[in-house]
Length: 413
Image (cartoon, rainbow, N blue to C red):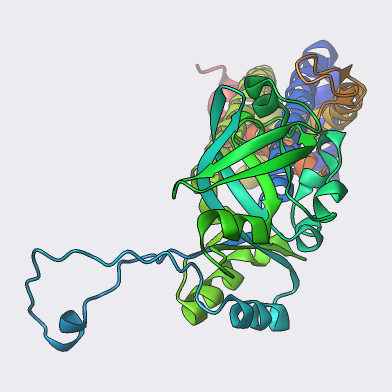
């Protein structure tokens, strides 16, 4: 094996310029693959982190995943019901105190109840449709990131009590209202209540900034004529990955719909998987192109060293030894390109991490590109490179192993 290795080194060194070009070809492919994977993975991780931070990990609502069966349907196997008018039920989550106590006893995280109702926010002659959300300020702090999104006023002013409200800055612009102005909230039941604006928030999500308003839970209950009612419980877990398991247990015990953040964003997460497949397909294509350079070199060496191959086989080298020799040469070029590609990839990723930009639309502070530093990217790129190099070296190696030494020595073609 040592002799085969020395012969392989001699062959590669004998075509230094072509070998160097092939090594650089593999290195460029590996380097740019690492940089692309780091950038795309960083963007994906940043996107998922924003999802996890901005929304509850589990959301319990007063809905049921399937419609309730009629009593007759539970008794008889074959029933036909028509002309039935379902009873309107606006009770929300039944016995919310017991449900909350049960959840707090075993859930590894924090939770906050709320009452969400649809209504209209009115100021002067302007009206904006909005979701009026009644909350408990202390509990809300533990599950909602909106606390840090205030541009005027503060969330603490809402906790002071009274008829106070916080709205998005976009809604305030549409209404023409500002801090300390008094707006009227009108519920879908026709009840009206005046509130003083004590805070303006900006989350960067248009639907929230122009369509949500927060009041105290008791004020929302009065506005909707639903005393002591809640219709939603939002949960933040210590480990967001536990959300599906927690949601299934809650739904089985309480009977209400419990939706994990993975289920709520299922289509987005599937799109990320498809994007990763596309990314690694591109990486494989880049490595395949680099493999053609390796194939060209090994094929040329095989052709030029035909007499040497004949002599070696005449001296007792087996076909497996010939195949191992040229396969080793291809893998050596791939390994050298991978090592150089690691250095190039690290340099590119580091350069991308230094890129800074400012979001002019939101006026946020200067930020950096989301970059993921992972040894897995280096391993995958090198794996593709070595696989491509091995395949590119295998075809000429197989042909070299089948050469007939007698025909070559006699000068046959």
